[in-house]
Amino acid sequence: MGQASETITLTVAQAVIRYLAAQFIEIDGVKTRLCGGGFGIFGHGNVTCLGEALYDHQDVLPLYRGQNEQGMGFAAAAYAKAQLRQRFMFCTASAGPGTANLLTAAALAHANRLPMLMLCGDTFLTRLPDPVLQQLEHFGNPTLGVNDAFKAVSRFWDRITHPAQIMQSLPAALATMLDPADCGPAFIGLPQDVQGWTFDYPVSFFDEHVHRIRRQSPDTAEIADAIALLKTAKRPMIIAGGGVQYSGAVAALTAFAEATNIPVVETIAGRANMLNTHPLNIGPLGVTGSNSANAIAEKADVILAIGTRLQDFTTGSWTAFAMDARIVGINVGRHDAAKHMSLTVVGDAKLALTALVSDYVCPVLWTQEAQAERTKWNDYVTENTRIGKAPASYAQAIGAVNDLCDPRDRVIAAAGGLPAEVTANWKTLDIGTVDVEFGFSCMGYEIAGGWGARIAQAEKEPDKDTIVFTGDGSYLLMNSDIYSSVLTQKKMIILVLDNGGFAVINKLQNNTGNESFNNLIADTPTATHQVGVDFEAHARAMGALAETVASPADLADAFARAKAADQTYVICMKVDAYEGWTKEGHTWWEVGTPHVTDNFKVAAAHKDVESARVRQRKGI
Image 1 (cartoon, rainbow, N blue to C red):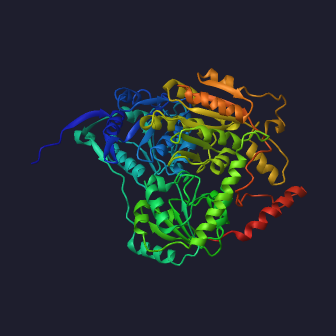
Image 2: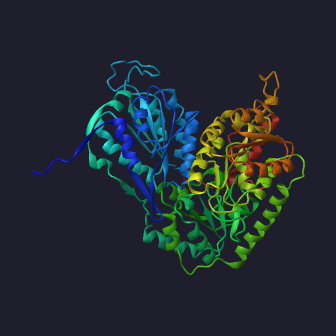
Image 3: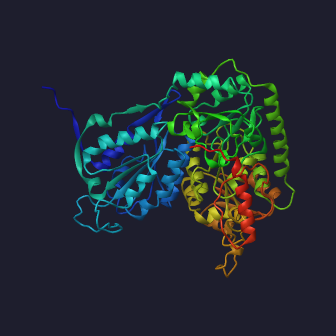
């Protein structure tokens, strides 16, 4: 008879943390810990058992104290994005509202295909003390609770009901988070009693394990079909998405484009796939894109869509392309590769680009036409960002920072008007330096995400800066991680651009014929006492350095001071709510407008919106 394997008696919480501490990943031949640590807010649902286990591993799994669970999730997502999905952070929250606060962040990670592990408290498995504090009771289903809501926003979901289950659940969660095709957040519910229960775990379960992210080779027949279609192209175009960076395929993309002379356009997630100065970089595509990219998109006959999920802001709600254009979907995820009846190439972007090499060369006149369009767009951006124009605008602030920042500084923006303005106006100085969160478009991601990105950046490039662009609306929604950055000495430079409310939605409201209503603070009917927010004083109260400037020229001087500072620095400036927006570079975007109304302006706007629908491609 064989000898019984050696075991160790641990609580579930102790076993979970010990297992995480033993996981490593090989990146470019270097072994590093897979989990960079975690973000945590303790409550009665996780402090006694999980907290005890984390205390003993704080040297290898540092725990960052969050101020808000949603912010913790945003920080974890931004960390994973900065790490190109090769490493992740966990979030731990207490049962009830603490865990519920993570729901929005989980949705963001799910939409953006980002790994994040949630270790959350749950109600007692035995139900002996039910109903407990913060428990939601469902009269006909006692197994249903808040944590079940995460099933819709997680790639992997489990509730541990026996200590032995983690030996299956934890490896499955990690496999999901590291799978390029299924990557996303993993949720593990830990009932409060089960966390403290013990089990005799095999010691081998905690052996050091080195992971490698799989590269899925594309099917040779699909590659052959793609090459055959490409050879028919007279006006080809490449759409480069965020998946290009996650695959490590930036060099392969550049080499392929240069070998074939095919123009490249970028998605929002794919910004910084190519340098601004590369002659084949024709600009960002779509609703918040560039005239140059959109001009060639509407004429292209064969489109290679690489590492993109073809979101509506990329496709102009599917009006950006010619009706008869053929799309080749190159994606490690079958779901994304097959969109809109694309010719699918399912596999890793780097391997696919290497396999696509043929003797095809794009017609010279088409490439020259694309480059001429880009030259015109560059001239527009130069004028649009020029300091000295009135009024002060997002674009001028972006231009001032762009001129002064280090090429390896990381730029963060999300939600509101700034994603569009950064996407259109930012000139990429180095590869992989732009994070515009527009997958789930979450207000509040900016500062919290900046903190998470800075944690990742400090591990690799501590001498560079994380630069956050945020509006006053997002700042008011979630700003407490300024304090987190001060506590942890993770410096950020934060630009707070105050336009007096939710100005970009006010712009949409006006553009669809509606009167300004409840978006700008000045137009909020219940705001009977108009008072401005002193963002500088507020940031100083959380320990940051801060100043308020009157103009983009002054902002440039303040940014130089922020670069020289050794702690988080907040620069505040007012911008105009109505003027100064980037007016060029937009495709049609489908929004629901009233089909019946007594307001003639709304009716006229509805007719105008619907008039463009004839260009909308019909597909899946």
